[in-house]
Image 1 (cartoon, rainbow, N blue to C red):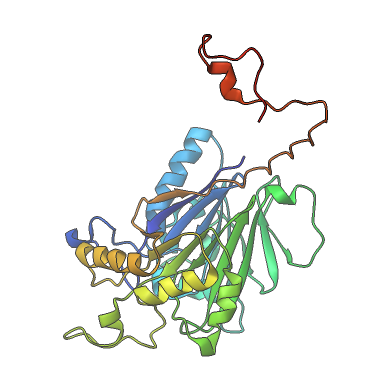
Image 2 (image 1 turned 30 degrees about the vertical axis):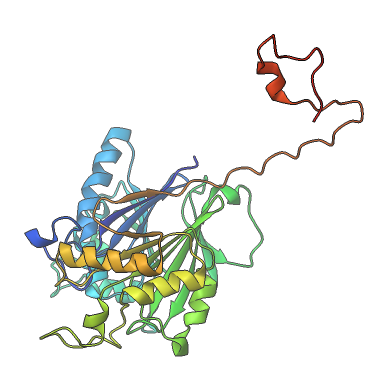
Length: 345
């Protein structure tokens, strides 16, 4: 199976905005679905994951199979976790859902994610979701392997020896960064010679690792990057709106500069400010074209397919001295103009 598809279910930052002026791009918060190697990988569990859950259940019914999915959390701010209690496949013990995320407190990701979903904040605890079969720290310097015949996700040191059929598996690596308050993980996902990098909440700063990010995202096929603010908003030039410099998010030009520094092939902007209507997001896209031509604005329902790397062409065998190279056009000349012998090049 060689498909490598990316589908956006939530593209808004900070809070959901279910209003008509946001209709074209959507009002749900961060959630992206990736399908490859026969596995479903979900990036963040903002409010968009509730809509994704219905699609996964419907597909499972058609296939008469359990839902098998892995959710990767970039960090634990509300707009990236608020949909988890409404991810309905996690309630069915027949399903197999695995959660991975950063240890941002020293208590471990399993502890931290459990505190988000527990009374009095929510009537159920994470342990009541019997479809969740594993909760684990995503350890820096490790690679998560998915699909390709593996019975379950496998997290192992990046330097570990290859295992059989590893080229058929989805491989995920992570970079921990201080470019967002309370720290964050950026993810790089690779499959069959193609890759994407997910950096939904990021404010590039040379003092906090901008060069390190460029190396991590180097020559990725698709960079999904934070573009929460316009430049005027970021620098406090927008009336009645505070400056947001230092809040951990990018304005349009910063996102485009990140794509240029990484030599990314395509840039998708996401995580728009909840105040921005569709017309404002349109303007973000127009301005982005000035700095990075291959830019797309994320919207709910956007589906992108990363084609597998084609096999290298076979080398043409060296010509034998007895071979005679002819002009192929000779074959198609009219009889009255065709010479008696094929001309040589």
